[in-house]
Length: 342
Ligand code: DAH
Image (cartoon, rainbow, N blue to C red; front, top):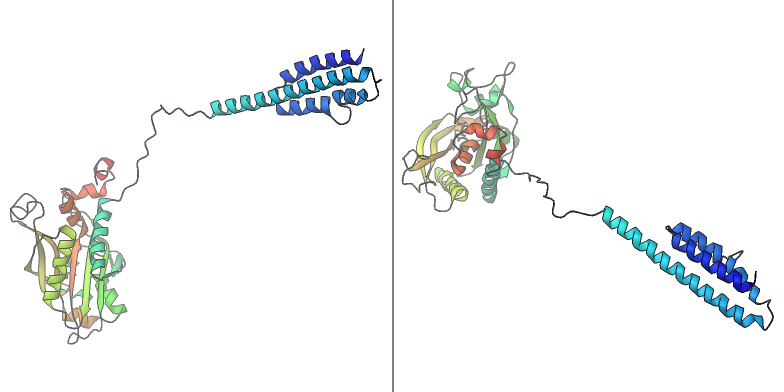
């Protein structure tokens, strides 16, 4: 076979083989077959051109070069085709159907009680109070005795508190935290103690056996009842709006003297009278008073030198009043239809 014939045959074979190649590895293999330095079929022919006679050389050389360019072109085209095919396959495999409906992921929310708790804390932090917590299991001493609650007081009855083994109970209010704080530090004291409390109450729309309170305590030199009034008035405005007014009604707590119930004018009807304030125009939001000298003495404070005020509020009650919830049990059931409203 003449060289020109060999070239024709090579050209036809290369065209068929390269066009059939569907993978880059096959292309590499064919490249070596035709253009490999050692034994490449076209390389050998091109090398052979040198040995030809001067008459033959130009025509064969030209033809060989044309075949070389032709095959190189085939390789380039096929390589691009393989790349494009691969890309198209990848894109169609990863295709996203943007018309499909999305999957709903319910975002988490803060529970109504925690929203309320956070707001109460924020207001008192703004007034310079620090937040301290006390234990939920208490001794008789902290829950009652140190708070001047005598042993014949009704809250000591089995019916009111959850008693554990001898001398221990689930705290029935957050007031014992006051005693812990005062035992640990000297005045001035300015703290709030939020936390859970437990009582053996029959469950109804406004009572539940677990609930939250926020206790407050301030002790220093020359603290008077007007400080109590000013502070709790600021709290009421911070919590329920700057237009709110407060009123202090005489009350009784064993650990404060004098004691007062704190009322705020109804934020639902603006004091006109409605269902929430039971037509009185006022809503009770907490108990308060000047810390009883016996309580101060009990923790080693000198009542001649220091005075203080304390207060305690029910978080569930405040949450219910603020958001118009009429059953405390809703706060303890995980009903998303209710919870997702807040
Ligand atoms: N501990 C009281 C209760 O559970 C609330 C309370 C009233 C706390 C007056 C106080 C206070 O610190 O001064 O009903």
